[in-house]
Amino acid sequence: MTLGCLCIMEDLTRHVINDAYPNFAPMYKPNTDHELSAIGIMGQVLTWVGFALFLGSLFAAINLYEKMARTWRRARGQGPAASAV
Image 1: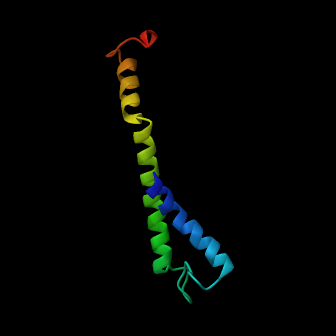
Image 2: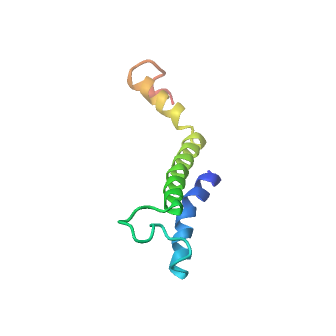
Image 3: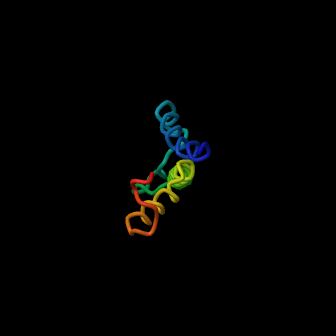
């Protein structure tokens, strides 16, 4: 979960630094029609990877798969009755 948060924060940190120092880490290549620079592509990729890591670790921490499987079985009448819980 921590790694996911760090990946998400990379692009946000770049925005803060870019506000203080406008030419430090530009997201777009100069003199192009909004074509992403290497830093822009890295920020975009790390943001998506960060969200995937964050959500994956969150779902693992709350045991979401087992809870959904148990609810699915109960809804289909294949598990213990809901009132038994």
